[in-house]
Length: 273
Length: 289
Image 1 (cartoon, rainbow over the protein chains, first blue to last red):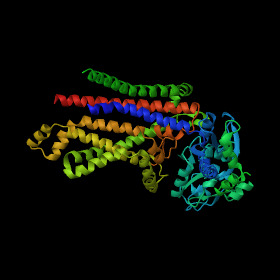
Image 2 (tube, one colour):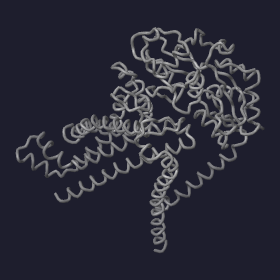
Image 3 (cartoon, rainbow over the protein chains, first blue to last red):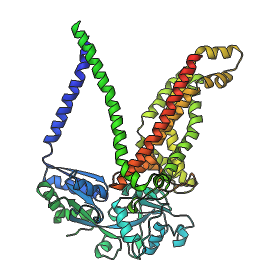
Image 4 (spheres, rainbow over the protein chains, first blue to last red):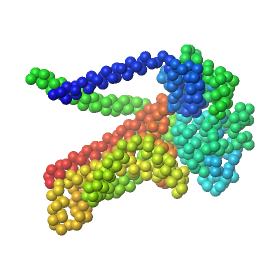
């Protein structure tokens, strides 16, 4: 009998727990900023948020990913306070308020073991368009090229498509033979492990694991991207639905201040101050 | 007496509520998925959607044939390896292995079911993909998917098959042995045929799991939307296709992903119904015996 009574207490207990949890959530919203979107901006935003928290220990900054398109929709419907994109807003997207956070080169990367050190933009188009399929055509070993790209909807892919594949006319689509991976990190991991793979990632993420190729004879370095010599550079933005107010404004102002922009440079992106 | 009566009644009501809740959730998911997919199905057209080979959401091209082929080929490949391995393992556990070995193996197999699929994917990405790359191609491939998926569905086949082999009445086995059959003949001619419905059900259930797997497949198959022409080619599965793009999708694209979900839903329903029919027939046959 006793046992049975305990059973009936269970649902009641669950309800109580749920209420407590919900109450806790709703009272915690003050002092929280949420940011989400581009996975290119994500690691930078995390560093900026960590630095911002040092000065504002009571403020919680939650950084999420999802991709540029998520940044736009989540910001527009209010899921996040600040959206992040690594491409321009498209004409059919809601025209939110853009805050230029940084500029970022897109590096064409291979494994460090690959002998090719530079390509022309036309060759990059050929490789990702599927017309150049063997490394021997561009001064490498006689082995087929494994093309690694981002999935549809990625801001890095959209920016790469816009800056490399669309110009000059006619626009070329990224080959359907390309391996599609869902993040900068997985592309890096794959290119690092496969001597015959080529991919594109944010220049801020290039390290010794992969080799960034010179494009049209210009090395893929931060200085060259900043001076405009390196040809594949795009803008990274924070988005807000209206002109930002309150905590969101504080955070964005901090990111755009000289202090925030110093972090931008430290992380390998191009500062905009 | 009275309090007892109340407890009895209220517990019954509670159970009914719980049971109908799960049904309502199922119905809700089905209706919602179907409703969300309608814009895509009407705008793209069912035939263009199912049999189109171009999937370029940015250009409004939504053909899922490459993903259907991807799903089917990786599932078929995994079953090809998992069925003989799984049934063999089940026979070993049920009939051949000494008690101690079984006590060790059986929990190990059951533990395999509980490993999250992302872990299978990770191991596949680090271990299997480079291995396939040595053979040729980019490594991310149908073959890598098959190997990972085989490991994932093996436990389902092993545990259900073993149970059904064990469920064969002892008299069958004793009768066969008494007639002078060897142990192997008994297994092959008596035990396996008697438990075939259970084994078949295990295979169909494993198939359901294989078709629905998304995470591990994304990590090892390369996700190229293209009909694979060799096991070394990359491919995308239906479930993987939804998971890769759902974050980015909006408008018609999102609706198209829901339409993929409907296709997947129908496939799973068909597979599970087959499993139910087989199991029902099996229990009926055993009653006749």
